[in-house]
Image (cartoon, rainbow, N blue to C red; front, side):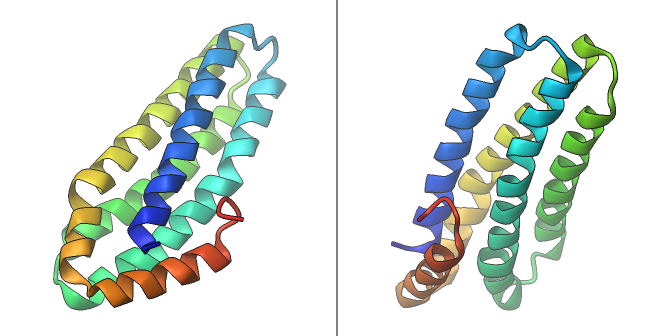
Length: 146
């Protein structure tokens, strides 16, 4: 398994989770429940973003000089964290539902961008052996892979 295989697999798990959260949103009765949904997403998304940054992006960063593109993706990770925290601060139920959907859509868009542009670039740039080694490191660190 390569690092890209692992990260894409995590994306699929998150996308299924996002669909389930969205499906549940109309039945949520309190802002506290929405806050709980956010907290359930925050830690695994943060860990996933850290793995992308520490394993995939950094390898690419050393080889290429595409700082602007990678800087934007780093910023996206931070923005997603902020969006989820923002949802937790909202006291109006309907606004919290809407903002959580915005955060989920931002995550989906970010995953799509990575899969369309960054991951193929990483696969093109790094040697297959390096991708395999990074995949083993990812697997040893990932909570979703266990």
